[in-house]
Image 1: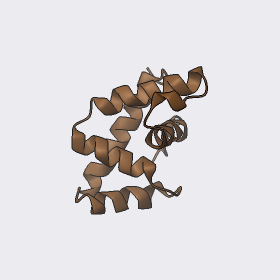
Image 2: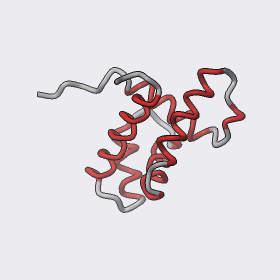
Image 3: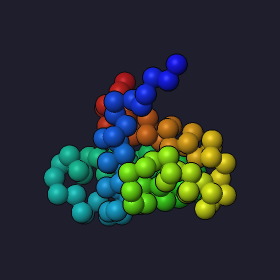
Image 4: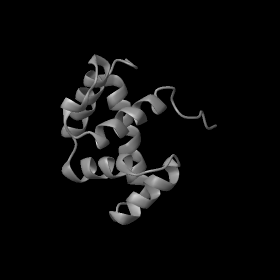
Length: 103
């Protein structure tokens, strides 16, 4: 059965949107934003370039419909939709772990 999305997903999505909109850590207004930016940077920097570009395209896209955004980015970048979702899910979990939200 479908368990729904993990509790950390919305917060990590916010972190990734902030990162995509602010390519420089100098934009951080406080310690939490700085730590979020750095965690996202560490995780995304470790990804292969194509996956990093996919993630940045997803989280730079306007709107709240993640299904539609991921599907559109996958089509635009000629990436299989299942692979795009796998990268989003894995990267979200890695950032949550990096921020100490999950063990």
